Image 1 (cartoon, rainbow over the protein chains, first blue to last red):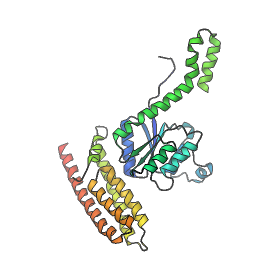
Image 2: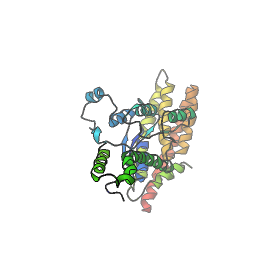
Image 3: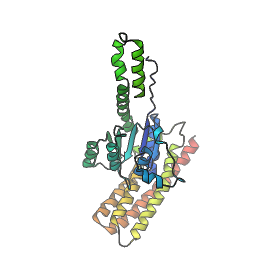
Image 4: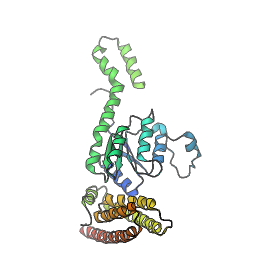
Length: 188
Length: 121
């Protein structure tokens, strides 16, 4: 195929839930779909992991119990979160993610044990990709893949669009100029 | 039946790579439930009475029950919530005894299930 293009199929999902049982369940469900999974127990921990907490807050935290994550290395392809959580709710988390310039394109899915249409609509209106009723099942998790694939395609498209467009013209251009463009696109 | 289709979902998630998944989930359910049920017991002794807190803790317990497919326990929790939403203290205390009873029965059934599972292996 096209040389140098690696298709990274391992998606990384961040799951957020305050229930220890539901965390275990969602982790297992996601792993059966071969996703890489990180599970956290609260909205605050999720924000911390995503690097959205104020610097002030993260500096005052003691390091003894907290895991230090290198924000630059973290790549999350999807966030799935419980709605009802103490402190920062799933809805609050959704809003914060969609307000962030860095993270707003990450698909967010909300889970809830309660079927409240106004709640569901509100989440979808504020950018949630989908809403799952608990208990979450394999069939729900199977619905995630298209969302992840779509984002992946968007990412690939943006990165390689210029190269693909230029392909037919490539032969007309001098090899040097093509090479420079290719490098720039990769670096950008 | 004491367990619904959700329990079967748990069984489906068990495989050679995760041979004890169901047992692990159920163990978590026991410890988590013990904690939550105790919280409710204490909240029922609290004066002044806090229906909102009761409702909140019961909601958590109901969530866990639903996640493992404990449908009879879940149904009793729903009954409880109707009383707490109505501010009916007596209804709450009475129904909570029934919740605990259903939970104890379920625990016995699950213990039998795991005994059988061990023998069958």
